[in-house]
Each structure stands twice: as C-alpha cells, then as structure tokens.
Amino acid sequence: MTARTKLKLEIAPDSIEAFLALEPFSATPQAHLHRSVYFDTPSRALLAAGIGLRIREAGGHHTQMVRTAAAGNGPFPHQEWDMPVDGLRPVLDGFAALFSDAGAALPEIVPLFELRNHRLVWKVADGGSQVEVTLDRGLVVAGERQSPLCEIALTLTQGDAAALFALARRIAAAAPVRIAVMSKGERGFRLTEAQPAMVKAEPVALSPQADVAESFRIIAANCLRQFRLNEDILLHRRHADALHQARVGLRRLRSAFTLYKPLLLGPESLRLKEELRWLAGLLGEVRDLDVLTRKARHEGLRVRLRDLRSQRYDAVIETLKSPRALALGLDLAAWLQIDPDLATADEPLETVSDFASGVLDRRRRKLKKHGADLSELDDLHRHEARKDAKKLRYAAEFFAVLYNDKRSQRRRRAFTEAMEALQEHLGSLNDLATGHALVETLGLENQPGVEDLIATGDKEALIRAAQNALDEVIDAKRFWRGKS
Image (tube, rainbow, N blue to C red; front, side, top):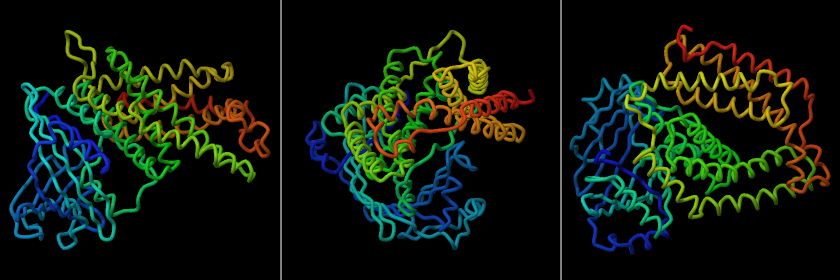
C-alpha cells in the first residue's frame, strides 16, 4: 500500500466525548481554526468542469487554492496551484484561460459558501506505522443555510494500511461512525441547492489504463458512495426514493461481486457479499410497502399500509444504526483499501478493457440462454432471466466509459433502450407472479381495496412483449466489440 491511504468517518456530535476519552485522543492535540471560502459562478461552471477555487484563512494568513479534476473526472488534467493572497478576494488573472475554457467569465466568479472549522490533530504511532488523525467540527454556511460538519479523517503517513483500519475499528468500538463519502466542498455545493430526495448512480470513472483489481475497487467505491449518500437522506428524512436508491446501490455492489466472482476467491469477499445480501433484503421488504402504498386507493387500506410502512421504516433505521450494519461499511472499506483478494496468476491479469468485454459477453450469453423461450419457463425461472438482465445492464453501465467513440456510444444508446424495455416487461411479469404472495405475507388478503395492490394483465401478452424485448437486446450490436 502507498503511504497516503486515507479514510474519512462521520461521527455524531453527541459521540465526540466518547471519542476524546479513547486513548490516544485524550492527549493534548494540535488545534487549528480554519475558515475556507469557496468560489464559483452562479451556474457552477467551475464545478461542472471539475475545477475548485477556494481561499483558506488560518493563523492570520490567506492561501488561495485552485484544483483541477483528476483524470477521468473532468476535461482538465489534475493540477494544483497554491499561493498566498491578501484577504478573501481571489487572484484570478493568472487563471483567466483555464476558467474561460471552463465557461466561467472572471466577473461572474463569486463566493458561494464558506466552511468554518475547528480542527484537532493527533499523530498516532503503532509499531512501524504512523497515522495522522484529525477531528473536524464546524459549520458549512451558504447564505441563510447552515449544515454541521463533524468528521474524523485518518491518514496513513508511514507503514502498513492495516494499522490505519485497526485504529478505525478502535474508534468505531467506542463511538458509532460511518464511512464519509462527501468532500467538504461537495457538502457546501449541495447546501446551495435544493436538498435532494435521492441520489442516482453516478458514472464510473474507469480508465482503460486501470488494472483489473483497481477497476473492481473503483466500481465498488462508486456503488458504496451511492448507498451512503442515500442512506444519509434516509436516516434524516425517511424518503421512499432514497430508500430505493440505497437499495439500488447495494444491488449494484452485489452485482459487481458477481461480475468479478472468478477472481474473488478469498473468504472475506464471500462474507461481505452475504452481509450485503442481508442488508439489501431488509431494504427490499420496505421498498415493497412503498410500492403498495402508492397503489392503494381505499382509505382504510392506505392507513393500514402507512402503519406497516412506519413500523418497517423504524426497523430499517434501527438496523442501519446497528453495530452489524456500521461494521459492514468499515469492513468493506478496509477490504477494498487493503486487499480485495483478487486471484493472481503467474501472468499479469488482462487489461480492464479485455476483462470488461469478456464479462459483457458472458452476461449476454447467460441472458440469451435463460431467456431463449420465456413462454416455456415458470415464474421462478423467468425471474432468474430478470436478474440476468439486471446484471448485464449494470455491467454495461460499469464499463461504459471504456467504449467512448461515436460508434460505441450510438450502439450503447440502442442497447440501453432495448434493456430498459426488457426490464419493464419482466418487472410487470414479476409483479403478476408475486402480488398475491406479498399481500398474504403482510396479512392484507381480507382488507377492503386489496385488489388495487395486485397487478393484473394479460400474462401471455406480457410474455410475448418481454420475449420481443429480450430478442432485441440479443440482436443489438455489442457496443463493447467495436466493429463486430
């Protein structure tokens, strides 16, 4: 591992006392007061281009920092410029060309938000390893809006990354913590906009130069981020769309484990996948109630479903706060950072592009085999074909950036449209197959208005539509195979 492994943890303000009582954080730390002002245009032109501009005030000194995105995250290569400035007015003349290329006129660049932060710093030695630990407590302020900041960052400055995660687990045993996935700047930009009810999956920033092991880490981190962003919304607002997207994040992550299964041979990968299955299953049960509640028209039934939904949401929130769920996030982060136990051979693993093409071919063949004649399958096996379709679509999304020429983009759009139609029809068939059983499981079979909850339709017509859509998916040109 490199000597700059970093882990950020969110901690509740009421848990700080327990953290500070833990050895070695009871020792006197270094203390710093920071104020950082972030700048952009009102249309967020710099943010869209992957450029950050801020001025930090500390100890009476002001430092301007300009950052461009890392490769794969924006149109500019990764660069950094730090320079002293007088006060909180940015010096922009030397960056006119950079900002102009990003579509940001200099007169439009204004302060959007600021971070007021009290930082404590400890240097923790463990054998031959050293970890810098910072506790940040403060406020992100955008106009009249404020959001508290309370997070711990652990940075490995020397030695083995295992020491960093051992320390993180000691902290977690004393005070509940969650993996943090947002930067301070991102928190501020979100505060300047309408608060989202959910966060959909973001594009996966894969590079064709990444090796196969690194590609798995990047994909898994992307899925974990989607889950965590929606988990935060769910914990604070219990929004149905956030629960759905949190579940999608877990489902995508489990699919990534499946797609890389031939290389994930260690026991920890198997354990983590089972833990993800457990958590996703709990979210799925509540998702079913959200869907049914939207269908109900009878007032008495709506009241009954809302009561059930409230009970299930209480249980989900308690589960997300449980030691088991909290440990899962930390264990997953540790495993991804230290060793995702990808099988190695005497020869180097193939390139990520070759690996991706092989994965997409295998998932396509599996869907073709299992969906060759949907009319001859029972409901259970049609559901297996539905899962095959989801895994193929997730794989296509994971690896999309590797096939970015115009021909591949055109083929990918056609492929995606066919996949969407297939999933819609297979989803309708699944609703027909599971509706009665779900109603009985919830004890609603004798409830007035229950007929609104049970999907109806011409099953044979839906099977024909699904078969036609599946055939279109198989007939669609494979965007990952170039001219083939």
